[in-house]
Length: 84
Image 1: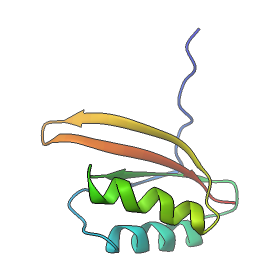
Image 2 (image 1 turned 120 degrees about the horizontal axis):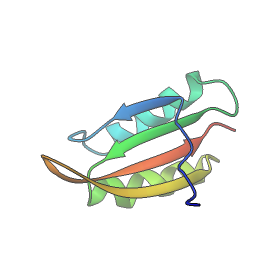
Image 3 (image 1 turned 180 degrees about the horizontal axis):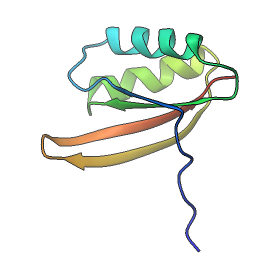
Image 4 (image 1 turned 90 degrees about the horizontal axis):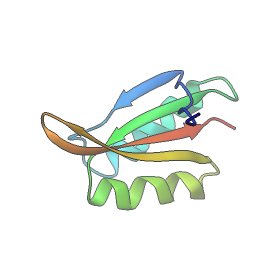
């Protein structure tokens, strides 16, 4: 039996969004969500993946999962963040 990924309550596609705007949008979205809900954020590789997870952890948001995915436009990352 394989472990399945938790189903996110909301998905936020921030591919193509520059830093630090992608972090700001993620944080604003999390602040509007009820405690315990799960947000999945799609980020570009490179600077977004270097900056956003660290910034979220510093703000106290636990990142439950990071997955690399492929689309027709190339690779991107899906972060699962739990609203404390």
